[in-house]
Image (cartoon, rainbow, N blue to C red; front, top):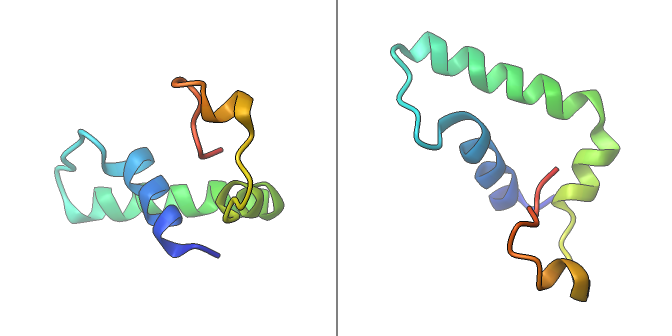
Amino acid sequence: MPVEALWRWLRGDVTYHHCHATADNLTRRVAAFGARVNQDPCAAADGLWVKVHLDPDVANDDSASSFL
């Protein structure tokens, strides 16, 4: 699995434009992210799979997200 995409997803979901008050708070949010991802590992794998062909409908849609 592409680890960089997972880190980008984690950062966007947990830390993007947010400063956590404590390390424990950050740790809890990261753990909650991991729990959500692990609830449906197939969907997570599909979202993180390296794309070798672009879907023209998605590639031209600026609002489309590359993550789940």
